[in-house]
Length: 266
Length: 301
Image (tube, rainbow over all chains, first blue to last red; front, side, top):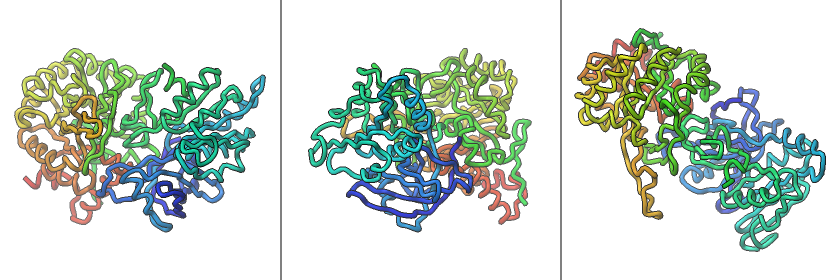
């Protein structure tokens, strides 16, 4: 399924924390766009072609409602591009290219786990910081496919966006570096991969590396969603290449979701 | 109604805009985004004989109105391209340009001979990649070196041969004349401009190779100057590229004498850029009563 490109309207913009925003736009599959799935992303541009920054910004899909076409992004304001995205108001226009990438196949994962000969037959979804963003649609799709996952969410400080996960997750485990909420420490301190048939993760590389290491000890299969600096989002520029055990792979097209062992194994 | 067709090296291109190598994959990446049949052609990702994984470290950096890249000719190799990418590229309904880089004259010749037996329309000989130690730029600086590789490739290739030149050439006019004399059917220029950036927090260059290639609107006026010089130096067609992002930009290159243009970095600003630029050219032609680009090609000279 290939990406398409169009201009669309902002439906809502909400600031959850000083640097965390939730942006909802209209995305109409009926107009030729494909339905986005968990782990996929869009290239967003909300500024004219002759204004900086030069490139659109890749932002993961946080949520999508096929009934209304409401497409939601949860993102952190980091630089010039995301600052301009955060200035968008309802009714403003932005350009979208997507859905891009090879996300999580929630239906297949749920079927695999349900078909396991032995327990645990459970899935853990592990997010760190803004890496929780793509996990909401993942949890929704897993729940719809019959396996409500457990969510493990780690934050540096005050958590955000967790309320959305309540209905589509079994248990929610929380950890913060600062200790303001949940377990005081890293999320890997509360994750026990032996209790899960699959672990799916998105967050800082150092966190995902730690999650993978725990999974590897228990032989629990682990999938990781990566981030990369990219120009096109379509597999054309090769700017986001990740050097994996099975060769160079584009984060944007062959990823962003990879078998964690291919990326992190020594 | 304007006629956008461009006769080029015995082919008929549907329009004057060709997607530039390294910015368009092998084409299928863009097929649901724009109508690729409106393009003059697609120049695929630069190939090397055996393929290579590309560079480590940072590969992209945005600059004011530009983009630095250090991809390092990541590609699957000529045979893999012929077996796996070419069939899909051929089916896109536009001319197929195979961009070929090399590590040695022998590599160039072997690759060109392999491509000559396939359905590619044009071989674009890349003697201008700045991002690998022997990415071809070794042959793109001095006119005599360029002539040697072009002459040897010409002898083993039956396809139309476009030679893609670097702005790092010692003399644009001299190298253009040299590759024309060596049998090039056309020239495309220019590839990226060698550039540098330093990460002041890490206190070292951003790119592992220290230098990277700069493209985008920032380089356009310099590229246009070089295209102007190239057109003045040779009698073979010149394909102009460098920072073209609008129909007006493309028309500047055509009025300077370019037969066609390539669009690269603009594909990253707007994934519909090639078709949009083509339509902007057509709108300008309609508004000015220009029926065919031949009426304005080189008119500014």
